Amino acid sequence: MIDFKHVTKVYEPKITALKDVSVHIDKGEFVFVLGHSGAGKSTFLKLMLREEKATKGEVIVNGYNLSKIKERDIPYMRRTLGVVFQDFRLIPNLTAYENIAFAMRVTNIDEKEIKRRVPYILNLVGLAGKRDKLPAQLSGGEQQRVALARALVHNPDLVIADEPTGNIDPQLSLEIMELLKAINSTGTTVLVVTHEHELARRYARRVIEMRHGVIVNDTTVGRAGVR
Image 1 (cartoon, one colour):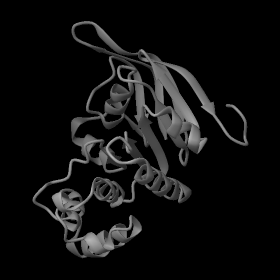
Image 2 (image 1 turned 45 degrees about the vertical axis):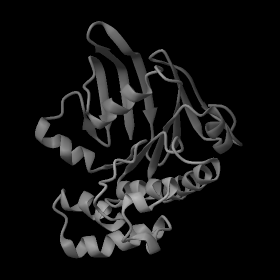
Image 3 (image 1 turned 30 degrees about the horizontal axis):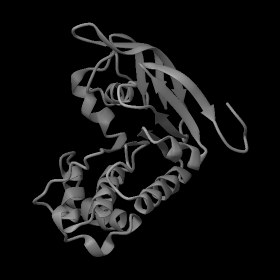
Image 4 (image 1 turned 135 degrees about the vertical axis):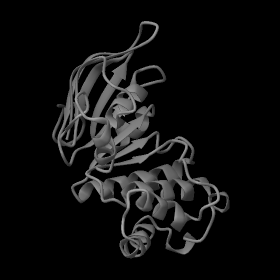
């Protein structure tokens, strides 16, 4: 669950990135946050990750009030999230298996659980045969799948994909989106941050469109009609 309540974010010197943004996303939704460069998408994402703090208003993610959260609790909040970054952020000298396992080790997960969970996740994203490959030995689409697997390994309540199709070809883009749909079908909330209008139209889900730091449209396209 995500709640933005009259959120404004101002960067110095007096650059307003978000202006009085209010939006609610329920558990289990599949939502696109859409907008061109400078629309406010990156700030929206940084506030959810608590990389930045709202200047005004409240941001609530998975039950954590990020306007009031204590610093020591931020890592626990982040464990409820799975984030797929646009640049993948894989560790170049670690294999696909080890990149995913590393994400578990830094949160003190038992090694026995790591050995059980990582192969399952690799199989889920279609990379069971690539577990011992370094990132440089993988295609862009395969690296994206490792990043997605790493985001999923904690079984998060919310998966956030930042421009998940920006660095791969159109066919692989569709494969990644199908994986995100499958994840959503299990009850996990999925949030896709993108500038690609066609991608949002193709998947006919809820679309929150941002422009110049404000939400200009919030619709659900599909058989249910327009929200």
